[in-house]
Amino acid sequence: MSVEKSVPATLIAGDGIGPEIVEATLLVLDALGAPFDWETAEAGMAGMRLANDPVPQATLDSIRRTGLALKGPLETPIGGGFRSANVRLREEFKLYANVRPARTWVPGGRYDNIDLVTVRENNEGLYVGFEHFIPIDGDPHAVAIASGVNTRAGCRHILDYAFEYAVRNRRRKVSVVHKANIMKALTGIFLETARAIYEERYRGKFEFEDVIVDACAMKLVMNPWQFDMIVTTNLFGDILSDEIAGLVGGLGLAPGANIGEQAAIFEAVHGSAPDIAGQGIANPTALLLAAGMMLDHVGRQELGDRLRAAIDATLNQDGLRTRDLGGTAGTMAYAQALARRVAG
Ligand code: NAI
Image (cartoon, rainbow, N blue to C red; front, side):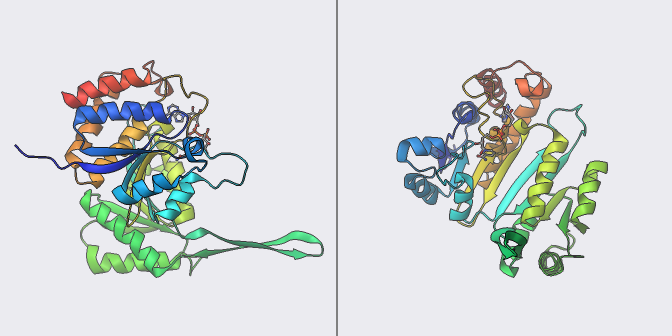
């Protein structure tokens, strides 16, 4: 009999529907036999209540210890100068890669059979916040200036991650998205680095193409199946990953991973959904899919695959769906059906 090693991980229930979808996710992960040994921690409004801080020190310490977290959505307290807890976590752990797989889970929507992964650079580019105004003639905002920063090291980091991901997950093609025809330095360095790394180490392992961002946005709407995996800089990745989530329809089905050197944090793309919190009707699938990515990340892809197969079967064979997908199942009824599927 093989003795399975347990994997320490931090669990943050979060705000709004967070505790409900986390409870549902744990039920399914238990039935699956997932190896995680959870340390619970608080963040967001729950962190405020506990420690008067949306990202309490104890939470940072826990993630630093485990290097791995599953996180419910965090509400950013309004007013009082609070910075987004999500942004703080991203900065604190230098989570440089944002990975968002998009798949058609429920056929019959706008686009069937989509299976597309976006890898977005998370720390550099035009989002570094180097911005200022120049006042002229009494107008304090007469001129606005923003500088983007992309470093060779940052480009290498994200491209290495994306290309390794492509090989590990047997992706057939990687599209490097840029605007190097206009922003020749800022996004030229990304394209140049991508080409060099592909030639050095990845030629023949998958198909490589580069696409200009505006053309990419149009091609995604016209024929998304031509893409398999996209890797791009921060701003373009932010915009395109939302566009792609829209192709497969539904926030309830979109997971994301934030990967850094010392930690990886997995979450649903959606927020705390205060309008339905506490009603037991939220869809836990996005967080479950994030947990599936976490299983892949720790080398337990067979469990991740079993979880994804169970989600597919529950949605499409059992026809059990939460309200956001047109069904009537409550959060826990759906989770119990999934638990039976993963155990069976
Ligand atoms: P939201 O994603 O929470 O909700 C948008 C709409 O989608 C709502 O109608 C909601 O009911 C629905 N929805 C979202 N997730 C659902 C699910 N799992 N099942 C069924 N329906 C679902 O976005 P909103 O309202 O803009 O943000 C609410 C709060 O969440 C804000 O405080 C925001 O800052 C925070 N937020 C946190 C994120 C994170 O922690 N990663 C991401 C986005 C927002």
